[in-house]
Length: 237
Image (cartoon, rainbow, N blue to C red; front, side):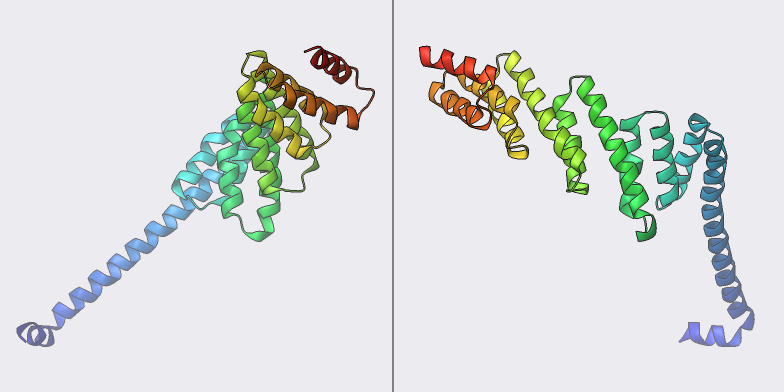
């Protein structure tokens, strides 16, 4: 009761409250404008470098724009593009994944195409380093994003086959078996995967499974010399 009466009898008190609210609203609004303009300013600086082919110089500005405004889709997109232009595939992936996730429908396809390029590039890079498991994971991500990717459907079973062969060369037949089987699931006529699987069974001492696998190869390609050689070896055993 006292507060109500005090406010009613003191116009200066009410004016003070109104002034305080107005000041806070104005200050908050200005902060918001500064926040957005800061992100845009950093993006514009980065874009100037990017358009002049100075991708290394552009990166810090695009990064800063994403730090100021975590929902700045174009900043993530151009950060990823800068890394792509420098062949830094693995570093391109996080910003491009974010760009794809937050992009509006009209720019989502561009973000997806760039992300797929980065995934393929990173997969090849990991493959060349002998990191087959990482390469396989990246190619599977491609298929999740684009199930109709013919390139991924070719590269994935090849990579799995090479992965299985690498395991087999280290005497890890048990580990190689599921890898070869997965390669065959993706590519049912993958003769190299079948032969690798047969050799993995042989390493494990599973003669009947090896024989059955080789018979499958011969059904697909009766003239396959490697399969014929393995068949003779198995018959001797």
